[in-house]
Amino acid sequence: MVQAIVSLGEYEDRILTIVKGKYGFKNKSDAMNFVIDKFEQELLGPELRPEYLEKLTKIRKGKYIKFNSINELRKSTS
Image 1 (tube, helix red, strand yellow):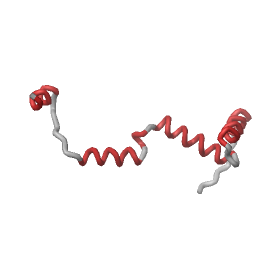
Image 2 (cartoon, helix red, strand yellow):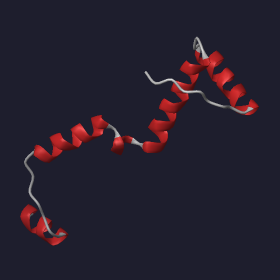
Image 3 (tube, helix red, strand yellow):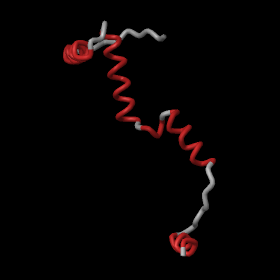
Image 4 (cartoon, one colour):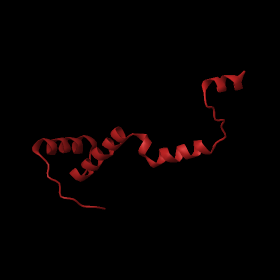
């Protein structure tokens, strides 16, 4: 675990206090970790998470046919 000294403004401190109370965290450190996790999920999205990369790898290993154009796809289905 990494420890850091963080300087927060009054507004940011109030936000952490609200998050701490709303979700029942023991301390502001837990509240800050929660906020960071939410930020990661919403901003970074699934494309950067390891689970998503594993999913892509499984999909890529599957059998598929590569088409260079829509016309080739249409010819193969008719």
